[in-house]
Length: 411
Figure 1: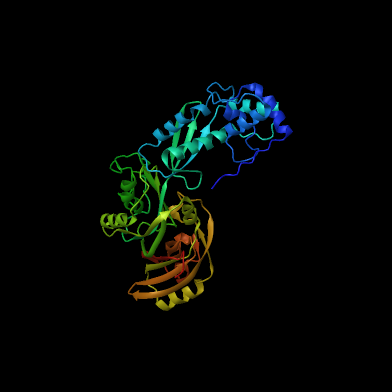
Figure 2: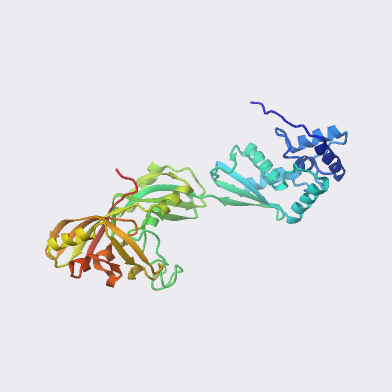
């Protein structure tokens, strides 16, 4: 498909071009003074047409331009540097940027004011565009800003290209079947992850986590420098995550490979997790999925084993009173060291006794997001009001807790 060329400078543009003709600018810089005038032409082509219209010499591609200092004549060198910066990486889409000397940009604006042009395009914008076009032609990759794999920043004063490798994202759901696993890596509180006698030099409070187990095969496959794990909330370490699992996004940092065989990785994960963790519904994801996972606040269903010498009729009476009513929960004692001390209002959406035994009973609950279930059962020294313990008039203790479902999407 042919590009329609539209370029019809009026007398004001020609007058500005006449004033600029004595500056001995290179073809790129001269044409860029009128870069927003018309379309379908490169800046050197604009320069040629304006020069011919004025009857002056056509500006050349030169290395001694008083404005850019020959930067545009050396674009091929910057393409070489960009390619070297990205060596050893898999990438398909890229975006370009550049860092400029402030004096050069100020000099450009001064020229705009002196020749009274209304159509100037910045050197930075033109350089980024032309570098991107040459890179596309040289590498066959796609330039632009949409879902880039890498960002190439040409630091012009320093003479090098800085590389930013964008993360690879994978979403899925996990089931946690081990009551000794935290969701994420838990740095040792004594040494803060550096390694000490208390943690055996590992830098961790717990040997491993859901994050580390799930991330391991992906780190190997991508050669990434590290990972971040984004879960839709988290369960207690001693709680199992059952049902359809908890949604998560795994963010892989500075990956060297981006193409993933998710079926193979799911098999590797299943083999290595040894029944402790299951990864389900693995699929490619994007940065936006992290935001959606972190901002979601779905209701959750739990199964809670409770120890306490209380008649089931009394429990049912307390549940009938509690369901749908506001519960004031002050930040629990067990997490007060890492969370702000405030009172949150939550509700029990549904509750029923599913099993009874001597000195114990089991509940199925559905709660609003953010409800501290253990504290609602036990009371936490009055920090949760009303608690189930308070409603039955006897002290209760949580024996076990399982998350049965995250209701992020209803069946």
